[in-house]
Image (cartoon, rainbow, N blue to C red):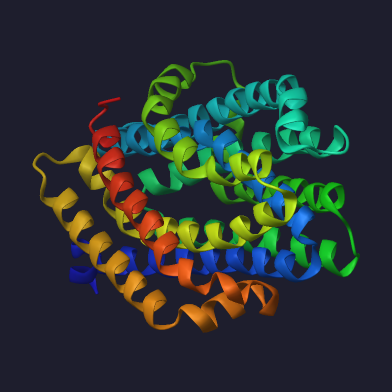
Length: 350
C-alpha cells in the first residue's frame, strides 16, 4: 500500500473516480435538460452554462496557483494553515470581483444570447462567484495531496448541480428557474468546501493578510485562452443560429465537453509533481495517458454514435449521430492542449 501511495496509484484512482463521477453527474444534468426543455430554451441554457465556464477562468487559475503555492509551502515545511487561509482569502477577493464584473456585463449577455429579461444574466453572477471560493479549496486540497477530500468535493459539485437540474426539470421551470437552481447549487458547493478545508484555514482567512490575486491574474492568461476558446461555441451558436439549430448544436457540445474533461484527472494527479520536480517525465506520462483516453473515446463514439446520440439527446436529436465522433475529437484536442497549459503553469510560466 505504501508503494502504491509513493507511485501515485492510489491518488490516481481516487481522483479518476472522483472526477469521472463528477463528470457523469454533470452530463446527467444536461440529459435532464435535454428532456425537460425545448430546443430554444436548451440553446440559451447551454450558452449560459458555457459562459459560467468562461467566468470560472479566474477560479481555475486560482486552483492552479493555490495548488502550486501550497505544494511548495508543504515541501519547504511551511505553515500549511497560513497557506490555506491565504487561499480562501484570495478566493473571496476573486469571487467578489467576478460577481461585480458579471453584473456589469449582464446587458451584453442579454443582447448576445437574445434573453427575454435580465434575471438569468444576473443569476450567472451567483454561479461564478461561489465557484471561485470552491476552486480555492480544491487547489488547497490538491496542493496538500488530500486526494480523497478532493475527489469528494468534485463529486459534491457535480451532485449539487444534477439535483438542481432534476428539481428544476420536475418543476417545469424555464431558463430563469434553471439558472436559479444552478446558482443555489454553486452556493451549496462553496459551503461544503468551507467545511472540508477546516476551521484553522477559515480563521486564518478572516485575518488581514496577503492574497495571491496577482499570480491568479497572470495565470488567467493561459487558462483563459483554453477555456474561452473551448467554451465560446455554444454562446456563438445561440447568437448566430436560429434557436432550434442552436439547441441541436448545444446537444453536440456535450460530447466535446465530455472528451475535454474525462481525462482531466490525469493532469490533476501529476500537477503538484510537475510544480516541484524538474524534468519532463510527468508531463510525458500525462500526455501519453490523455492521448490514450482520447483515442479510446473517439473509437467508441465512432462505433456507438447512434445509441449515444439517442442516450444524450433522445429521439428528437437522433439525426445528429454522424457528428458525434467529430465533436468528440474536437474535445480531445483541447484535452491534450490542457496538459501542456497545466505543465507550463506548474512551472510559473504564464
